[in-house]
Length: 373
Image 1: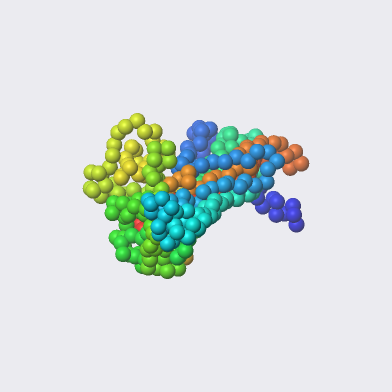
Image 2: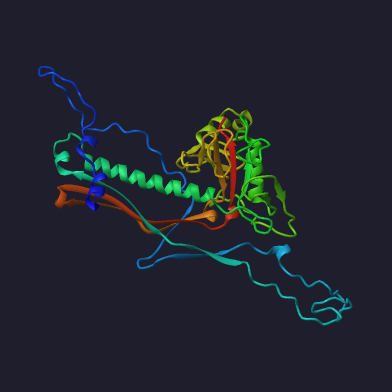
């Protein structure tokens, strides 16, 4: 039984000989040996997030973090005294009449996140006979296929992890979700609730603000803003070494390119390196804008990332402070191997990596769910 199941995944001749060709003996056919590729999806997410590599012999990685700086609202202040020597106020503190001890602030704003990379393996088993009678160099082509598939897997892992970042609650700062138009869930999105410049500006404000909101179910519903004096998030800043990045889908790129306000206000020029997927050197409000096919997308009537049934086709766009939001952790970087499997007269090719994606600061993520049209 084990052998039967193993053979199911092996690449047989039918998968390698292509479509049939009709020819005649006196009308020869020339066969090109170069494959005409389908379009590849480039890696758009990995170039923005942080990468950590475990040393050999290590099982997991613990990433220490400061949850946030306490600042004015988070520290305990002793202000009962006055400028008169010896003090004349009646409160507590070193210069009050009660001569009380200083009220100390607890250093509890430190934490860590843990990542355990696990094996991720993809491979092909090719019969040597089929390789010997084929015009195409399948070994080299399959190598390219496998490395592309690994890249795709990494991209989707990053996109999904960011899209699933823990949402804010009434007591804990986390990721926040915005919706197109006046929607409060993917179920209430309607045609025309697309990505707009106003929505981008709102998302940027939320990413950089101390104040944060949470939704009724944490994932969807009406949003409630919390008082800064009670709970706060990190006030992330758009910096040259770790700029705000807005990941959008092709439908959102179309919408922005048709928006005169976006085109007129976008910044061009300078010598900034343009990374994969960026809309040229265009930035809006200082935000780098990257188009990716790896975002979570939902067809109408499908289950959207906010767990609701999408009323229309939607895309979950992501505005992030990338290197603070997520780390890709490798126990082993992608490793390609090719070997002869003589027991079956095969050539086997595999790519192995140990991979984990971990969200470090959920409040460095703003989810923007919008209609595609």
